[in-house]
Image (cartoon, rainbow, N blue to C red; front, side, top):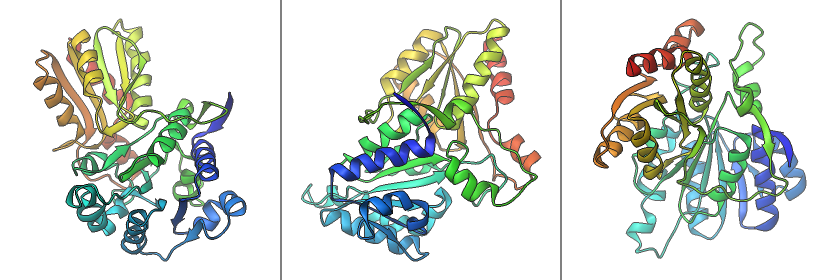
Length: 336
């Protein structure tokens, strides 16, 4: 075992996969700079820079995947997926179904997402609920270095398109490159347990579609993904001092959902509190409620989500994004 940062874990797992499979190529804007260690090791044919055109390089990657490669495409921010949505919505997600499984598109989109660093609603959206809404797309969002590397390895073994979301507060490379930007007046609430942690000496896939119980508790179940898991854990510590036992479930994968794990956890506590940095309306938080109701589980429900466009001003941004204070307030009301 060894200790790596979130960013190091992803790059380390990717290097292991590239060494084992010559079909894996990496491409995106500024990739020779951002992945220079991979460039030195694997050369410019497998680590390639692209023009600043998401529609062009994501579309090219989908075609390359159909042709037999396994591209890893880097997109600076989840917000920019809107530029290349046609390639995802109408091509990558549907080619296997429309071809009767004669064609597949095993492409991994490595995408930075999430807020908490003062860059507003065109650069800080999570969007995993929107992406998971599309049949044919797998959507993962790790919260720890160990899961980050393991889920990337699993994503590279899928035969269909995977959206691999990296929260910028966990990723030191994205936070430095996109968040700090030379600003000296901005601070970030980075969860230490998510930014750096113990990882295996040799990477093995973390099963896609399997949630992880990261804290047990019998009074209320907190369910989240990405940075929200750490906010939930912070809240659970505060609640424990007040006599409220909160369990925390890390989904790890938004699509497919681990329905059984969610239903089992909520059946034990009778209360579900969803912590979701994505938008509240028509998203993951509502889907989880529907899943548990359809399973016939009787429970009380609340959610702490992003309800509006994320403001640029840091003090306003903090009011909009899920926080441990908001989670504690919702849990207290739910348990009263």
